[in-house]
Amino acid sequence: MHGSQPIGLSDVLQRCEHCSVRHRAVCGAMDSVQIGKLARMAHRRKIPAGQTIVSDGEPVDFFANIVSGAVKLIKTLPDGRQQIVGLLFAPDFLGLTIETVSRHLTRLKMANVILLGSNRLIMVPNADHLAQAAGQHDLLH
Image 1 (tube, rainbow, N blue to C red):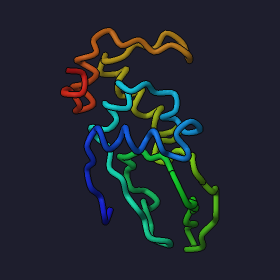
Image 2 (image 1 turned 180 degrees about the vertical axis):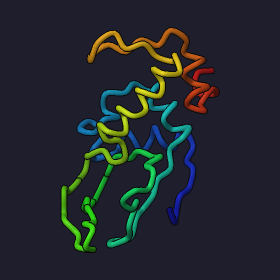
Image 3 (image 1 turned 90 degrees about the horizontal axis):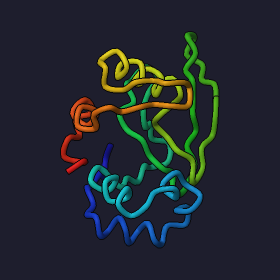
């Protein structure tokens, strides 16, 4: 996306403290250590009105908190018409769906990276193995 720029940890923590959606967004449940880990992969992006963020069928390899504005979720029908299937506003979360999470959990289970004890219990026997599978090994150290 245009205008992407990595930001430093102190900048993220400062922005988080003054963010209008901080305590209503998913990051509101995080402590400063977790926010710091998130900051290592964070990019702040301003998307111009009307610009497509991701198209149907493209892999979604990001996640985002919406801090201002609105995002229109559109499904393109086979005949080319578009149907609005949802609207997201601050502090909604964009990028990961239940389908995406389920697909990734299945892959991790098949690779013996995680163990599923029930629909509410996920066990990670080796955090380094999980970090390597995610390509984020440096986040744990």
